[in-house]
Each structure stands twice: as C-alpha cells, then as structure tokens.
Length: 300
Image 1 (cartoon, helix red, strand yellow):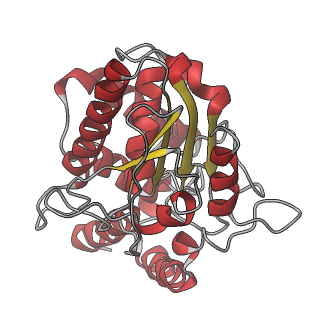
Image 2: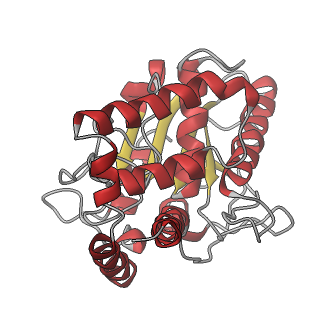
C-alpha cells in the first residue's frame, strides 16, 4: 500500500476524533453569588464565539437544575478542521481560556461560591484540562472550590478515571492527561458509552491514538512542549512493546484500512457518541445526563 493511502486512513481517524452533533437548549439565570455555579462547555459545532450560548447535549443536564444554581455556557470556536475557523487544538484552547475566565472572575467576586465544570465531547476535553489545571495547583482558584467535574465522552479519558456506568475498553483517543486531576480527582466523574470511539479507543489501536495526538497538538502551546513529549513517548513506548513500526504499518495496510473504514462507518451510524441522554449508567437504567443532573442537584 502507498504512503498516500496511509495518510488517507490516518486522516479518516483524525476526522473520527473530532465531531459531535448539535442539539439546542437554553441557559438559566441565578443569584449573583449562588452556592453552586455550573460552568458548561458544549461540544464540537454546538456553539461559536459569536453566538448566543447553546447548551446542546448538556441541556439534558442543566435544564433540570434548581433556579438557585447559576449556569454559564462557554462560547468558543467549537471547530476542528483547518478549513474551519480554528483547528481542534486552537478551538479547545479558546474553550479552556473562556471557562477559566468565568470561574476566576466569579471566584473573585463571590468568595463562598463553589463551582462545577461540565463538558461534552470537545467540551469535555476542555473541561477536563481546566479541572486538571486547577487540581494540580496551576490556577489562582483553589481545588477546594471545585465541587464537581462531569465529563461526557471525554477524548482524554484515562482508564483510571472514575467512570460512571459499565466498563469500557481503552481510553480517550487524545490520550490521558499527564498528572491526572490532582486534588479534584475525588470530585470528578466521567461517562463513556459503549462503542464511543472518542472516549474508548483500544490501547493497541495506534492509528487512532496518533490521530488523537495530532488533534491535541494541532495548535501547540510552547509552555506545554514537555507535556507533548511525554504523551508522544507514551504512545511510542506502547508501540515498541507491541512490535514497533511493523505493527503500525500493518494497521495502515490496504486490508486494515478497509476494515477501519467499515468500523468508522458503523461508529457514525451507531450514534454511540450522541447516546448520553439514553445511555444507562446504573441498575435503575438512569441515563448519563440524568445521573449527572441529579449529582449536581444534590450539591445545590
């Protein structure tokens, strides 16, 4: 098989790392200094920098919260590809920066307010990164003020994260966060539907893992160079343990490419990534979004 076909296959996986679908909801007002302030980050294509905030998937979480809880939705590019306004890395950085500003501003004004950070898909990627930043002491906001972190289809889900629901294979396509969530780990919950490629990529699927790494580093930040190196080294070490470059090339041969295309087509048709309003996470059949809403309600 030629190099061109190999890059086509890798490109298909990069596309699979990015998307989500749009659903529309509404935000809510609350007292200026509530006990709980929820900062919600929608998924890819669910919002834009110039739009009125659109909750998308997360509306199934926030629409049921008490009016005493303040909810702010983060607007950002929410794009992924070079022909859009921002590549994935730049778009996610906007989400992290905008969410950070909301929390830091509110934390300064409201000394007794605690925060919940929730996100879906690319929004979960950003929400998790911000939670990790705060939890590892790299923020002006102390970890003690983060009451909850809820991540639906986190592309950086680690197999060691606190998963709500049935076990799923592997981890997020973007690779785990170096250092984890630190002091907010005990208040962090992640949700990953069976068959959702974004948050459940097999450890030995090196094509998808490389595509995820390319997505994460598509608009690199110089200060994170050391982190990128550690993430690349983790993929490299796993690849070497699995047989090295011949293993990777075998995953890019013509037969493997055809199988991958079939698997991606099945993934898109399955709606696994859009299933969180129906995906049961406990023995009572509670959907992921309802479980997360009830968890937050218990803190209000």
